[in-house]
Amino acid sequence: MLVHEVADRFAKMRQPRVILKLDMAKAFDRVDWDYLESMMTEMGFGRRWLKWIRSCVSNANYSLLVNGGTFGYFGGTRGLRQGDPLSPLLFNIVGEGFTSIIKAALEVGWLRNTLPEEMLPVAQFADDTIVFGEGLVEQIEKWKAAIKLFELASGQRVNWDKTELFGFNLSPETTQLMADMLGCNVGSLPSTYLGLPLFHSRIIQSIWSPVMEKVHKHLSLWKGKLLSTAGRLILIKACLYGIPAHYLSFMHCPVSVAKELERLFRRFLWRGSSEDFKYHLVNWKKVCLPKDMGGLGIRKVSAVNKAFMLKWCWRLNIDKKIPWSKLVELTSGGR
Image (cartoon, rainbow, N blue to C red):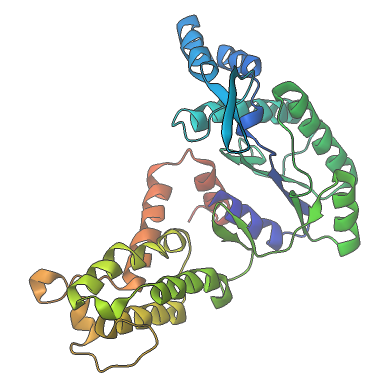
């Protein structure tokens, strides 16, 4: 949510701005254990904790698969095991090192902050990192130096071939020049971040195309005609509504998209296919009523979307300390 708000804010400003979407190469496999331990020490973890964590990350053995057979066992010297529930939490501690570098650079005036006070121009979620900066050549050089410092300290490596630079209020030539300086690609909006489209304009129907394609794909694979109406009802509630849930949680759903989704659900419920037509036995409004009111308990897409969006309104009023809340309050003038 923060990244989307910043992108929209940058697009409405007249100053040159950039968003750098970093891609870490084999992020979990490159974690340096000594660096992790030093970061935990700086954060105040005691010796017992450090001993426990060192034991957890260093007790794994590996073997090589050669011609279909395993060959030998050996211990690792770095890295976190993917799939371990502890690994994402430990990687967040590693990421704090990059945050500390940026914070120190801002305090001495080496980097300039493009966000409101008390907000760092960095958004991190596990190994996904977004940087918000000024669209100036000298600032791009300093950002590259800060990233290089983090690489040397932590053992991480940025995959510049998959990293993207998005320019705002910049000419295509200037954006390309900055991308060449970094060695990355020039990105174009809408892009994708954490499974959601990253854009800076009003929501258009084409943004929802991946959701519609996924729904069509699931319906084409299911043998709905071989299921009873009750079985298809369970699939709609348990599976189909889960496909657009991530999108519905973060952005407004256009009326046309909501109607199209419900049209697919209706046809699958009564016919077992999203393409074939058949007269519906019960009006859709009646179907969407709760069971105790004579309906089947299917929720309307627009109602689900509104409930998810109201959750963000609630968080906006309850938790004033999160960066996204501060940015929205500043953008809306405190309304």
